[in-house]
Image 1 (cartoon, helix red, strand yellow):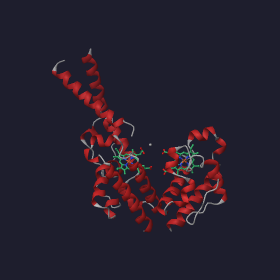
Image 2: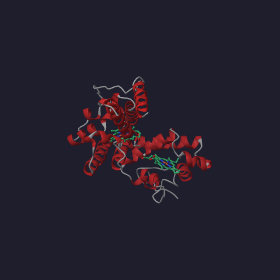
Image 3: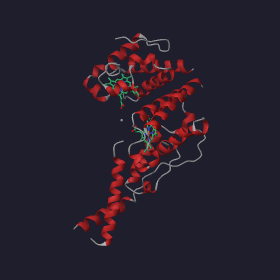
Image 4: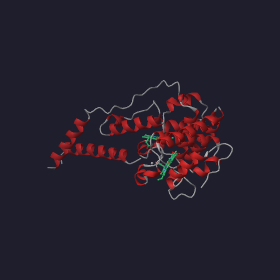
Length: 131
Length: 151
């Protein structure tokens, strides 16, 4: 190897190392409580489409960590607003229930009307809490 | 033979430099910035600036290698995506609910070690957070959320 190829190899190696660094993959019935009003129709949607993953006994650790529907009412108000706001976004963006679940249990995906009801409800609760 | 392969690779790298990476634009005047508008404790403000602002604000400080392909493509996409998800430069324009959601996210991502993206502290020594640093950020996010809620 002459000097030139040595230099080139060094440069290439550092590029590859740099690039390598950058591609390292960077993630029942619910007590409503004073702060949160969960009407029967919303409860039914939660039960059918969400509760299986998002409850305090869930085996889905990731889902449980992010949100426990049975514990929503016990959150402090600022966290409750955060979670309700997220419900709106996840539903609007069609992220929840997750794709795999939806493919396996199509009957558990909320209908368009139910999605809208869920969004309206969560927005209404956010407004009540933040007015 | 080895030399030909090396020269070939070098050629590819050179040609790659001609493809624009479209690094997101840097803006230094950000009247809606979080830190410019809110009393954030100094050590927290420093942590946010040193560990988050490159990807989550308009004030990105690009290192030299951010201009060299293929690293530039990765920096560009991390910065673009980071700003899309959370941009501290636009903090004041968020609704109260969006601020609370962002603070809840920040607490979760930092506590779980998801943020800053793992690649980042490898290249930025001042972004290596200790457990105490993480805890301090999480506590700040919770306390600040209470303040935002009361606003």
